[in-house]
Amino acid sequence: METEKVILGIDPGTTIMGYGIISIKKNKMEMVSIHELILKKYPNHETKLKYIFDKTLALIDEFHPDEVALEAPFFGKNVQSMLKLGRAQGVAMAASLYRNIPITEYSPKKVKMAITGNGNASKEQVAGMLQNLLSLKEFPTKYLDASDGLAVAVCHHFNSGGIANEKSYSGWESFLKQNPDRLK
Image 1 (cartoon, rainbow, N blue to C red):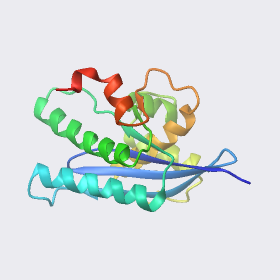
Image 2 (cartoon, rainbow, N blue to C red):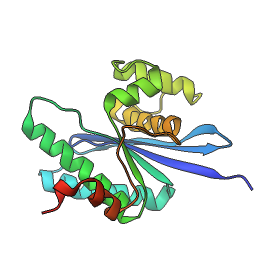
Image 3 (spheres, one colour):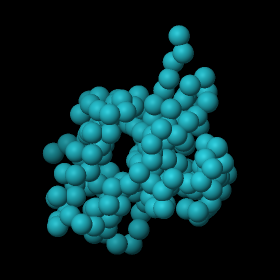
């Protein structure tokens, strides 16, 4: 019997959240879905977070991923932006953990390095390489946030089996054990 592995990759954001889903059969990678959530239209941050949580649960329920890979927020100068981005990532993580799906975080540089071999590659370069890796005639979305979500899933596939220096959680207990400072 042929086993299949499904990976959901998420690039969390509060304006646009990109996601991509890949399937691996006999070590052959295939894109299942790619899209983005446009969150600009929602009136406040709390509504956006609820939509991210609900949509992540819906994706998990529809595609039944074996694992979820998330892009970790990069450190920027704007503290408020970092806080909002961290919350977006947190609710996507919470939805995955709620469904007992193991999650792994990757830094943006690690994702770019895995896809292009260059940790400073542009979003366009990442999208171009994904198109090549997945044998896509044309890229199926105009938003590069969606390609970033797909890139996280592909990065996770490339790093499966020997993930070093990345945080991985198999459930709430594992998350709390690795992050005791988050317990209040």
